[in-house]
Length: 155
Image (tube, rainbow, N blue to C red; front, side, top):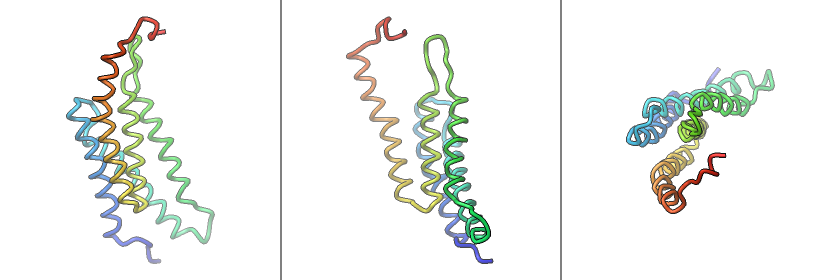
């Protein structure tokens, strides 16, 4: 039985997912975060791998069963959400790891888009994520300067 994707397609999808996730991870290394290039690249490529596998399974077994590639995609969202939940730590009255968890969740989305062959979507999402991690971080810091926290904010 012939597969719907060539091996070149598969290499391109996985390679671009790895690259796009790695791009986001580079910023995280620059920001001195624990989850960096390898983590983001692997989450993105792993998501792409699951998508490619789901497309191949649907092609091979589609006529014989009710296999839907979107079901695997939905489980990626849940699985990476669980992974991200493990990164979030409450230390005293401070919450840490929330942005890293959200970033990994987005990296999975980037990988899913790339895995389905939506390369431009994966690339644009990578750029928007980098903008969020850099420019919006600077903007957020300026807001915090003008509106410092009060004791009531901790309640």
